[in-house]
Amino acid sequence: MFKDNRFIGLILILTLVITGLALTVKADIVWAQEDIEGSKDHELISRFPNSYIVYYTQKDFDEYTLPLGKLDDAELSKSKELTGKLTRIQYNMEDKSKSTLEIYHNFETALKDAGFDILFSATEDELHWRWTDRLYSDINELGKGAHYIGSENDVRYLSAEFINENEEIYVSLCVTQGRYLAYQLDIIEVEPMETGLVDVKAGSISREISEQGTVSIHDIYFETDKAELKPESESALEEIVKFLNNEPEINLFVVGHTDIQGDFDHNMELSRHRAEAVVDALVDYGIDEERLNPYGVGPLVPTSSNDTEEGRAENRRVELVKIIE
Figure 1 (tube, helix red, strand yellow):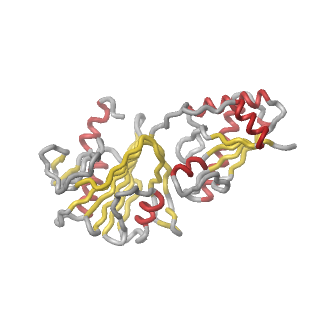
Figure 2 (cartoon, rainbow, N blue to C red):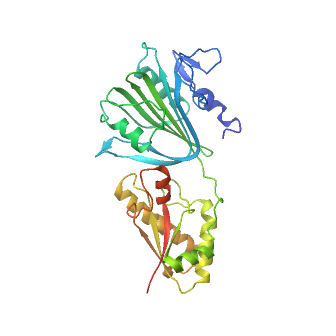
Figure 3 (cartoon, helix red, strand yellow):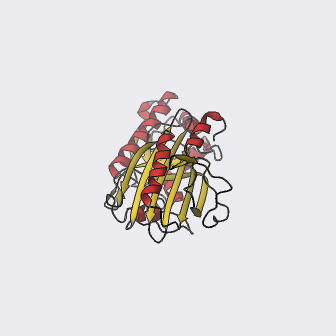
């Protein structure tokens, strides 16, 4: 990412604005303590001065639930599911003269100046005390070594979005005052996952339909939280078409599945729309629409645990089920 000059301005602007001056990360700035080994600031956003990294992880492709609302019966009332490059950095600082408001305001100002839209923001008075606990322990679990980010203390949170024709970037920021003055910075750069590592073949579809009456297709990809098929789904769709052309007597239920995160009714509707999108694509390839029946079952038929990211990825799928006449 950022392979040309179109983001130079963004990177420069997204340095923190302190007392009217743009502050970039320079070698001559002395941090209060050393960063943990292997960590670094994100290339897009510099740190608040005199803070140090206590937790760092980066994954080339992962999923993330971006908060857009408060807790409702222990679930986020509104959120957005994202996939892409995920960087998570937790900073501490020992300067007792600073406040959560000052840190939050500097990040908020820098993000807005860089063209980000603030999608959601709130303080501890507006959030339930378990909000950050749920966010960082269950929804977007922090790994081993992360410090506790709790909302029973002074907390300020925001979710921000930057989208243009080339990039889609999201920022989740939580600033809290507990034992330490700390802030958690999560940056999600939405991009397609590398595909083509595993192929779905017409022969394997035929075999599983013959032996089990059903086959799960995991490499049909959709835009995040939408029923719009991604171009990288083409190879899987073509193999389904080959199977149907080779087996003209077989009719199918095309069943959409989601994981359990998010609103139940929304997931049920989304899974149905995604099944319908697959049917529409197969019809465009020349398959008779009468042979295909789309249904959505949302999160009701998991094949793996929804407690882990890997399990939720397995549960998000399209399933082909043989219709017995």
